[in-house]
Amino acid sequence: MEAAEEFHFSPRPNRASEINWHPWSKEAFDEARLTNRPILLSISAVWCHWCHVMDETTYSHPSVIEIINRDYVPVRVDNDVRPDINQRYNMGGWPTTAFLTASGDILTGATYLPPDQMASALVRIAGYYRGNQTEISARVLEARKRAALGVSRSAGELEPRLVAEILDAVSSAYDAEYGGFGNAPKFPQADAILLLLEQSVLRSDDELRRMAVHTLEKMTGGGTYDHVEGGFFRYSTTQDWSVPHFEKMLEDHAGLVHALSLAGMSQALDKTAAYLDRVLRDPNTGLYAGSQDADEHYYSMDADERESANAPYVDRRIYTSWNAALAIAYLEAGRPAEKLLDSLFKHAYRNGEGMNHAEGVGGQLADQVWALWAAARAYQHGLGEGWMEVALDLAAHLEERYGDPELGGYLDHAGSDELGRLGERIKPLAENSVAAMALIELDNLRGDPGSQYGARARHALESVAALPRSFGLMAAIFARALDRLDHAIKVTTRNPELARAALAAHPYAVIDPSGDDRAVVCVGTICLAPVFTPDGVKESIREAAQTRA
Image (cartoon, rainbow, N blue to C red; front, side, top):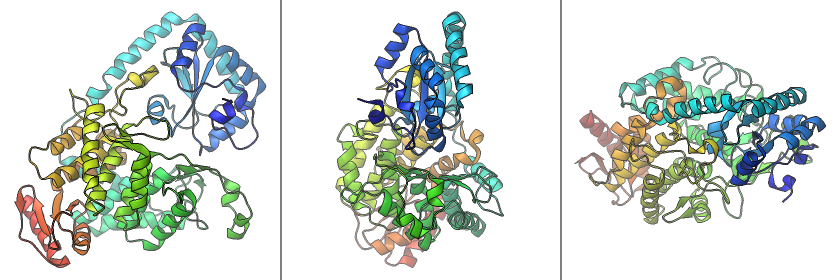
């Protein structure tokens, strides 16, 4: 297969395909060992502006092409396709330029390198690699010892005050003038917004809600939002949201759709969903593409000008975790999601084998946990008993293939690929938090004290509990999960109006649709008297929350 067909290069003229790129594979590592050459690992992304620039400049420079093909085994990886590789090798952004030993250990690395710096680095590192194997081996051994301690160091005790501490970190980082968090660059931070919205209900704190709504209004009103076609750009290079990086990511939109829904911003929600459904959605399958490329010139055009212009490239690959997350957001927003869910699980799910990540790419932890949560939510929204069977099967697969039997919690991949640093055990904070939220809901839905789903949720959070204090507001997703552990409430009803009232009254309400037109609110093994009206549901939830406290 030609490199241009196997790898995605910049859409503009370039010579990057003249480099003898290898996919991440045993063959590439074997070649590096046999030839005693270092590996040049390039981690790029379809949507990445500077990845394209590097293709057009550095990787098109004749001297760079010559040195790489002569002295290196070049390996090219797409960040979206292999997030587990990116997790271990990213050098601080995209493109990542990592120089590795033949065994896959890191020598050094950077992000974008212009042609002259790259040529110099290539010559210097290849010479060092040939002449300093003893020193390199010692450094590699020390690095492996440190990495081996990573999983145990991430574990800790669950302290209830962590939720308040993380909420304080979010509130402290809040930008009162422009909304959002921190200065520049400024990212959407959807989980921080969701934490504010959820806690505003639980704490009856209007100020928390005001922060979230103000942030969303500034984002949708500024340059980080596409006012012609709809949809959010990836982030702003400025504090006031005025100058964005123009790529649009499905991953970001899932959380932002959910946030717009909780904030009651129906006009922005409709316009955002319209973009997703018109541009990223495949009308035949109902599945959503991964991203749309950045194009500063295109996005400076008005609606009429765009009509005659070529729209930026859309990566049509289907990523399981992002589609599952969007399905959850659509369900919560009351938007159609049944076709998306049916197509996604037909496309990616095999009973007993879990979810794949993308076409031809094995599943990763994010795919399993988001799909588990999506299946549990599909059941709660009355889409059928079969979704509970899928959720139970995915929970079993998650524990069997990704679970850590010694320390609890879940590893970021199932261990089928151990090349290079992929043998290192990593428990990501976000995915373990999502696993916990899904398992908490499953525990409430099953109603079986011996189900172990609640215990697994607790273990997942304990396995990463040492991380939140160093993550600051980036730990918002952990706070959302930890608070659910102690405050989730079960509401049994098949009445959609009563279910909506329950969700409006309590963000952690778990809806069991196996009941009748009444609503029964339960906390643990304590269930209150049935109620028949939305106001009755709200009062029953208030009483249940007081009972738990």
